[in-house]
Image (cartoon, rainbow, N blue to C red; front, side, top):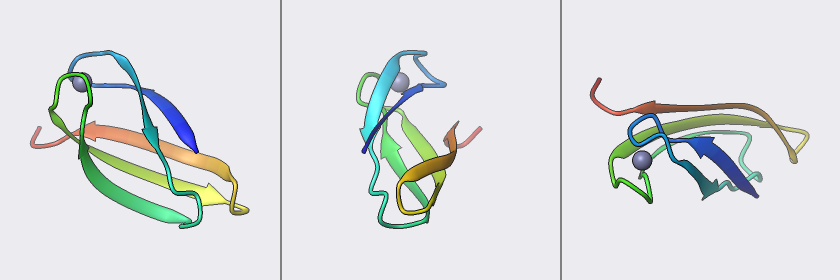
Length: 60
Ligand SMILES: [Zn+2]
């Protein structure tokens, strides 16, 4: 599923693709606008509902 978030570096509203088949995930990916690394964490419940979503800048 696609999820929109506000990048903590460039404050753009950007989207990432989330694999909702895995209930707990954290990974690092670069913002597609400003290319700064971001850490994503999220929890999926019932195999389809995005229960919690966090995005944090790396190294701050
Ligand atoms: Zn950004």
